[in-house]
Every structure is written in C-alpha cells, then in structure tokens.
Length: 319
Ligand code: NCD
Image (tube, rainbow, N blue to C red; front, side, top):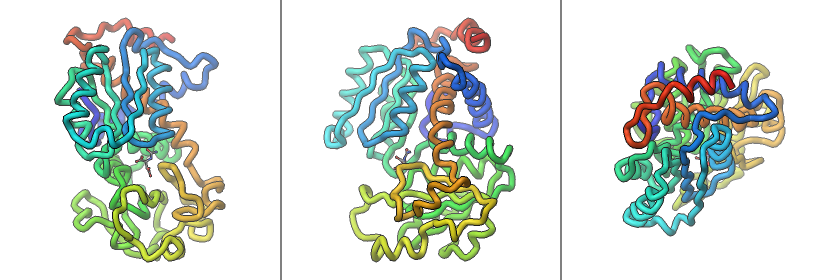
C-alpha cells in the first residue's frame, strides 16, 4: 500500500494487518514513555483545511509517538477553493521532503489529487462527503476489541448518511470484515442506490432491536445547503437514540463530535454501552499503525526508493 485514500486500498487481510499492528502499539500507549523510534528522522505533514479535534490531534500524537518530525498546518477552507492553490501548497511542502502527508479537505477527491503531486505517502483524513478511511479502521479496531470479530455482526448506521464520509468508509470496512450493515434515517438523508455498497436500508427504527451495534452519525449542518428534515425536534423524535431505544447488549458508537440531544440523548452518550471514548483512544494507535504500514512496514520504501532496513522494525519490536 503506497497511500491510504480509501478503504478500497485495503483488502481484509490488509485491514487485519494494520489492526494487529495497532494492537501492538496499544501496549506502547500503556507505558509511561509512549514512544518508539520507528520513524526517527522522517517528516510527517498534517494539512487540515477543515475543522477537526479528534482526527488532527490523534494524527499528531501518532506521528510523535513514532518519533517522526511533525509539521501541522491548518488553513481556512476558503484558501483552497481552487485545486491550483492546493497544488501550490503541496509544491511548497515538498521542499521539506515529507515522508507522509495527511490531508483533510472539504473537497471529495482532494487526497487523490495530492497523491498525484508528491512522492510522499498520502493519508486521507477526510475528503468532503467521500471517505474517511482511518475513522473506519479505528471503528473496526474498537469493535474487534469488544466482539473479537465482526463476522456476522449486525451493524446499524443511523442518521445523516448523505453527508457522511464516515458512513461510506464504515460500510466498506464493516462489510469487508464480514458484518451485515443496515442504514436508517430520514429518506432525504439516505442516498439513493447506496445499497450498491453492500448494505440494506430501513426507513424506520422498528427493527433496531435486531442490531448488535448501533452506530449513530452527526447531523452535518455545515454540508447542508437546504433543509433535509422538517425540524431537529422532529428528527430527534423519530431517530434520536436514547437509552429507551437501546437494548442492554447493544453497543453504541459515534465518530464525534456529538450534537448532544439531537442524534443522541445525553443519557445514551454517558451510558456504559457507549464506546465513543474508546473510539477516540483507538484513533491514536490505529493512525500510528497506518503511518507505520505506509512508511516502514513490509514493502514500504523510503522517499527515494531505498528499501527500509530491518533495523527500525527490530527497534519497534524490541522497544
Ligand atoms: C467526522 C468527520 O469529520 O468526518 N468526525 C471525525 O473525524 N471524528 C464525523 C463528523 O464530523 O460528524
């Protein structure tokens, strides 16, 4: 794998390899000194053209815990309204000879474009409504920790699927790992034809009790140019997940940030079945594993085509 632009860059074995690596980094996260020398001397650039708390901070921590040098850039989305200015930014950053560029952009396909303009490995940290592959990987990691395997699990994804890159990446990753995925939400927020991704659609929550995992999405107002639901109150009445809609064995997930009282009730967020904080925790080790896989894993090559020696690998194993 040269870049991680979509979940489609990974087959099931590839996902398992990254998540096994993440599990080994989870052990490092438990130590007082949470660092390994794997990417010492390599540079990682984080380029965020959109708001982010979890994704940007966990990519930063991931790069630092792998001992990489890190440059974090945040720009207002207006600065990249044109593809050309993004291209110029990448040309400028190339002067630092980065090993990896992590990019979040409001434009679908931005990460793919960047991959064509640089020798660095590119990680898509969210491109518009398109994909958010590292979120899907951390979601699978969190579920593997809870369930052992996703094989045969019944996962419901509820809410604003239309504007959600998380939903798209999750559908691909969950089904690839053997789960059954059902989408539910107002018909205006479920894209027509989405079943082609291998999931089914239920217009109401009537059959929600069949779910093992209830994955709730944020109402993404910033991507809505018109009203998709009559009112948030109406939406909450029909689709909000509160503790009364959850069975005790069901696991509750959300990528964050949560609109408390809209898609999730406060009590549900704070309930023991919510895995929201575990998802955030998984974000660091999974992003470490992705950077490691791209820059130092088997088959990875250094920026100028020099194969990575086994030294770094051994250092990680021994650290
Ligand atoms: C998601 C995103 O930005 O796509 N958040 C995240 O990365 N944790 C989901 C969202 O914003 O609702």
